[in-house]
Image 1 (cartoon, rainbow, N blue to C red):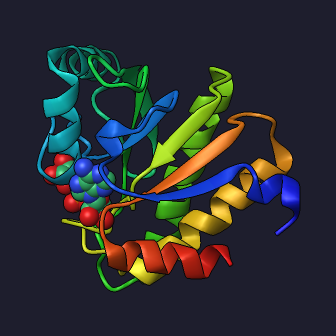
Image 2 (image 1 turned 135 degrees about the vertical axis):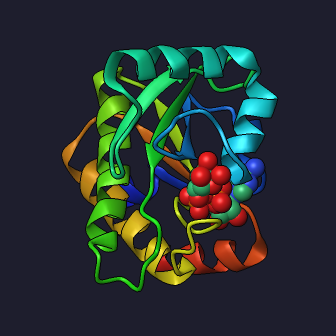
Length: 176
Ligand code: AR6
């Protein structure tokens, strides 16, 4: 990886709600009304203002389709914003899942660029409840972020947040 690019990508293991970045990305569902996993953790830590803005977005545009992304406040989170994106449910890999997952990363990064956000942290979208194989998902995440950073000034930095040791190792391999 070119030095300038590697300096713009970080890997940490931990809880995404604690990240001090401009925006954290939420692995949401198309209702935007919250759920389990990282979605539940973000709404719990960030407080009711996030859900309130999600409801306003629903009223305007009726939720969020798979692969798309919307942005709200971060409420009480250290991050000023939450970018909510809806990953694909894993269905064997022949239902467009890789392309939809790539769209999640690209559309999230596009929102960050539109707002000139300095830094964005991503969880492993779709790799929990939605069942996307972790290694394949990490490969897509790393590929899409590298492509984006090579062509865009914003966000200046992307942080991959691995919740567990297994995910951290997978990202390490892909980033090597
Ligand atoms: N910080 C970082 N990563 C986390 C955290 C956390 N606090 N908690 C979980 N992860 P998931 P999905 C990791 O299930 O598969 C919700 O109900 C987790 O280990 O949160 O996209 C939504 O409302 C996994 O690697 O999201 C949807 O209905 C990754 O985050 C559905 O789940 C994603 O796991 C979305 O499923």
